[in-house]
Length: 123
Image (tube, rainbow, N blue to C red; front, side, top):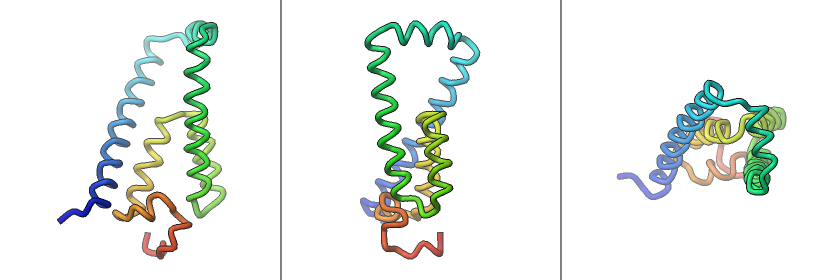
C-alpha cells in the first residue's frame, strides 16, 4: 500500500520528468528555429517580456535558496545553483529528480535534505 507521502514523492518525480522533457524539447526547438539576439532584443523591448524574465529569475533564485539550504555539500550546492541560474527550469527538473531518488520516498528527506535529521549514510 502506498502512503500519501510516497505518492506525493512519486508525483513530483513524474512532473519533474515531464517538465525536463518539455524544457529540453522547447530548448532544442528554439535553437533550431529561433534567433536569440533578435528575439531576445524584442522580448526586452516589451514590458511583459521584462516582467516574465523577472518572474522566471525570481523563481529560480527562490529555488536556489532551497537547494543551498538542503544540500549537504556546499560545492555541490553552488554548482547546482549556477546550473539552475544558467539553464533554468531544465536543471530545476533534473535536480528534483535527483532529490527524489535520494529521498527514498521520504518527504522529510526530500524537502529538508541535510536538515531532515534522518540518517543519510544509506543514500
